Length: 378
Image (cartoon, rainbow, N blue to C red; front, side, top):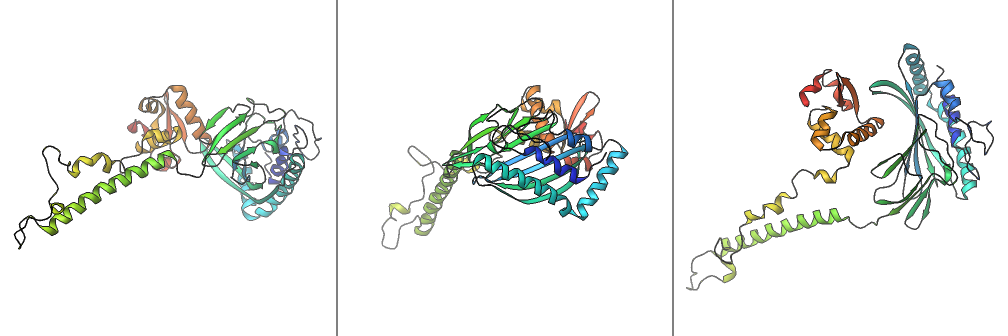
């Protein structure tokens, strides 16, 4: 397997676009010509099993890009080849980022002409990593910043025209995430999967045509959210109750409850707070609902599906059978499997078979628990 970084950089040309649905495989591919497999050159040369394109939008229209090539390290040959590439990148990363940057700059310039929007690319970097997700992978990761990727129109962000007609081969995934505080307005075509503030398209399941992909999101406003306002109201209410109680108690302690030297009763304001009887104010202890509302654990309704799964597994010591997750959360097998698959793709969760059971594990749990110890947590 020849996994040289210059070959990886060549593959980035799949993102080239022009005035219509365009996908160019390499510099030799004709503009406007759709190839049957735009990643074929890359896969023939480096045997990448997965290609992941992650695009994170910013409010100003900039997009943070991550392009990853995942190679299974299932034999000595592939492992040795990846380790050699990893050493090269570690020693001379600029040699690998330069060709990548050159081709991406061509890509961005072409997209700028096609959309009529000013665009630039910068911040190029390359890293490598080893990932264990049921099996061992070598990952080559390119990152860069694409300014002007999305159009900013008032409160709207419109993205996708810069990569119109992009072809996703089998084993290729495109994930697009929008900023916090923005709400989804429209997405074309329908994504294969959805997450909090993100949509995913997978090769083999989606074929972008003219005008696709398109994502439009709208700024929900900079004001505080309803949840934040409710939390603030609870906190302020608790402070007000505590303050009133302290003030009345303090006044009572200062004025006293006996007659003064002039023989008069203390002012009514200085009387101790009533402790019972008809029409009396309730003691502070009855305000537990207010005081505890700010210290209880977060309501699971406020957590995403992924966060619920991760928190549950963490509470069980880092490992848990998938069927136990189904029972604990009251989900269907299909929903649980879908959420677990997304977490595995992101590298936030791992799994392995234990008999007929599928065991889920947090990545860091492998070093803390011996194999098979998950049975004790389910």
